[in-house]
Length: 375
Image (cartoon, rainbow, N blue to C red; front, side, top):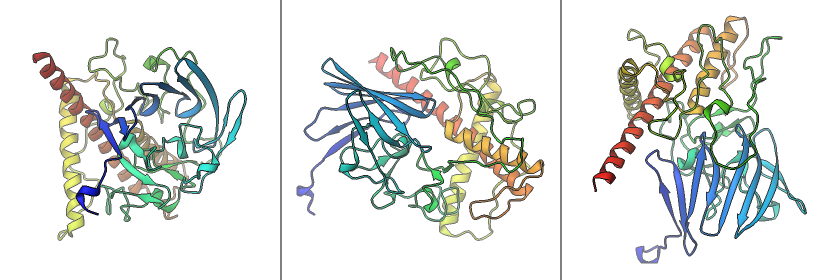
């Protein structure tokens, strides 16, 4: 195809935090997106406003307002947050998906959300996971771009695979990190995660945000020795009423310089060198974060929910193993205590590195605001 025959079908807009904040299809007005706790809650264009009502991560309903006319639709979802039915006061529309999330036009498109509660891109039908981080193609059952953590990192050996070829038991909200849908504890009477407490649902819909004190807390693992539940990062650079409890990343113990959770070979291949470079960048971010915490011990800046959840799972698996349980790896192998401790160390480094990236982004926003005021 010649360059002159190519047409731009849609333009995508990102904010300093690398989140997809808007898109402008060819011949259509632009649409703006708004997020809360890394979840899409609003889409607004010149004629319509659509709001998603959630309880934590679970979508419950959507409200569409077009030129003063409002319609509320209840969503019936499965354990993966995929809407299976959309119910209004006059209509019931059902939806069906393949194992990798493809659905035909006849299966229902009235709901804003699609497979795993993600928003399908209107032009291609792909899912832009991680707030626009990577595009997943449900027809080809793979990502359009390689994972930066592959092949020797957490991305797995196949850089384009979705959920390691098992989308029934795993999902990938960020485009980089797999999350288990079900976690089964074989130690009777000792659950891995305590999910009994949840915050009441606010259905007022007067705003798209609510106080951090009303948000569901991250499940706690052994809170007396290692509390990890903490408040979410607010969207402002300097919150007016900062929570008293420091963030999860700020409360992690300093890393041990004498130990390294990653092993390296003497003669690395080209791909291994890429992984080592990623590890070095992560180690530098961890070092800068620990310096930042020394100067700001009460900071509420934290890693994303998905990264913190990996730490929660790693700690839960280690605690479960100490109590006599068997923890299985992705291939069905039994993980020993040493492997589980390394998984905890890696998860702690990932939390600190991700928190430092937020510090960098907030500083970029401050710098941009100063430049705007100076003009």
